[in-house]
Length: 178
Image (cartoon, rainbow, N blue to C red):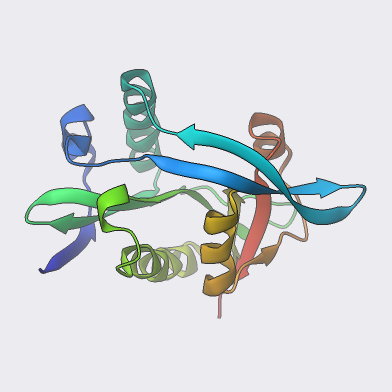
C-alpha cells in the first residue's frame, strides 16, 4: 500500500473529498486540568462527524488556504485518509506560533504512521512561516494526547484565548520548531 502525501488545493476541498474518511473516535478517558493539575478522568463518548460537521470543515479548510495557510493530505489509492492544516497567520503575543488547526487520520488506517508523517510535513510549513513553535488546541482524549506527547509536544506556555473559549476541554499544546 502506498501513501501519497501532498498539498490539497482550495478547489479540491469539498464534501466529496471526505467520502472515504472515517472520523469516528471512541473515547473513554480524557485529560482534565483540575485545580492546576492534569488528571485522567472517565468521560466516555463517541466523537463522529455529521454531514453538518463536514460542511463546516470544508468552509474552514477553504479559509485556511484562502488566507495563506496549507492543507496537507495523505491519500491511499487516491482516497483521502488523513489531513492536517496550518493557518497562515501567526499567533501569540510575540507572533511565535503557527496554528496547527487540524490533524486527523481516518479510523480505518490509524496506527500506520500517517499522523506522524503529516505532523512532520506541518513542521516544514510552520518554519517557512517564521514560527518558533506550533500551537495545538488538541482533543483531550488520552489516545490523542499520547500522540502529541510522542511527537514532542508540551503544554503551551501561552494559551490562545480564542482557542480556549471555543474548546474549553481541549489541551493547549506547543511544539518547539528546531
